Image (cartoon, rainbow, N blue to C red; front, top):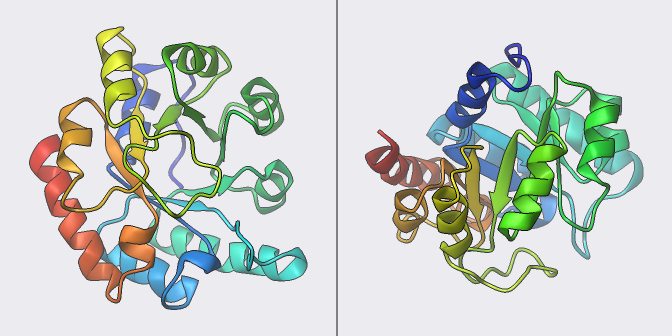
Amino acid sequence: MNHLPSSGTTTRIQWIRERLPLYLVMGSVNCKHTPEQVLEQAIAGGVTLFQYREKGIQALHGSAYVKLARRLQDICRKHQVPFIVNDDLELALELDADGLHVGQDDAPAEWIRERLGPDKIVGVSSHSLVEASRAIAAGADYLGIGPIYPTTSKDDAEPVRGTEVIQQLRHSGLTIPLVGIGGIHEHNAAPVLIDGADGVAVISAIAASDEPSTAAQHLKKVIMEHLG
């Protein structure tokens, strides 16, 4: 990953925003092909950020979990795509990952930022203005807002809110980078961007596709039509 600008600067905010347009979140349980094949193809199709999220009934554990993380991180490094770990601080530290994403029920963002230091990306899932403000105060670099649409990729998903929360945050004047997540695909991504998100995070739309590269290309085309 290229050097992350200093925290609190407009340069850092812009750096994060430029990497949010097409954010792939994925683990082995989400993939129709091997995770390595999916990630390689997805990056070729235009993915700009990657999050390793290995959760679910058939998820890998132990050494297999770590080894897959390393292989996917190597692919990201080869293509200069930031590698984010989902909700596993120890793995993020072990791999020297580019950052960590946590939910509201995970470790506190303040503690995460303290452990990771200022040179790593911290993303926080937020579902309201109160949660968003708390995350920003704790040092979050971006917020994941969702689920925007119904999703089957997360068993513990919050109630669907559409783009309501994104609109609320933007109308409040918050300028932190936002990424929408939850049931997003090429045919419904536009409203998420129109209402203020800086990108979309997807799982099934790419990982479960027969042709991940093509799926990513189609999504990226929609995204760039609205983000410029």
